[in-house]
Image (cartoon, rainbow, N blue to C red; front, side, top):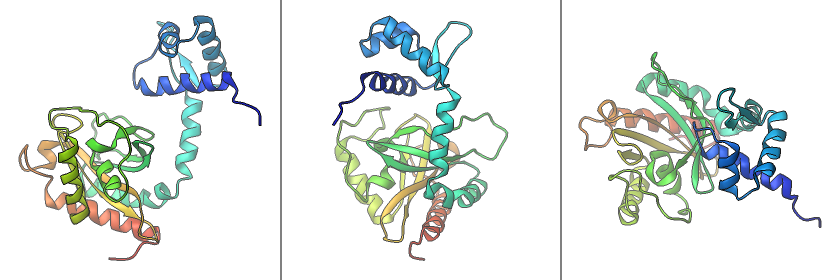
Length: 251
């Protein structure tokens, strides 16, 4: 069997580095240092990726970011995802009822991959999260997914002083299994909360989760209380509806 092609491996590493950079662009030098590449090698990879549209270069500053062609490929994968297709109508309904942003997620390695995102139904400026990777242990989506499966390996990064430690998380996960919904409170971002419920397929297996997120003052009656039960009921109803679409039992 032929071995791996080094140039393709390096190109993949560059794309992963730019993806993890989020909204920040990176220069050739920064990419070369991060990946331990010679600067001419990094520049050649970037020029090739730019030609096929996988990266774009700023006119001012010359830094690089992910390109539109790569996003289109990712979107075609997400559009083919059965969970996303079955959940479209119900996620829109949930956003209108809860008046908050809605996300649908699946496990992707050690993270939650957002496969669908509905904006909060107002005129505020918002950023599309479809395709984003979220830490499972500090989000309601992640807890709703992992509570019914195995914990991913790896350390649990602390994002705020409210991020749960492993012992606290173990208790929280037992509660998720008991009540069939999850929440986070200031755990990923100070001042933000989220609530989510698992989505099951015809086998009863958890294949995704749907939830809402927003400022604590809108989701909770007080800063140290879980999300309001009215919002929890909206989320759980949406999860049950999507589960039925996937052939899950009606309940």
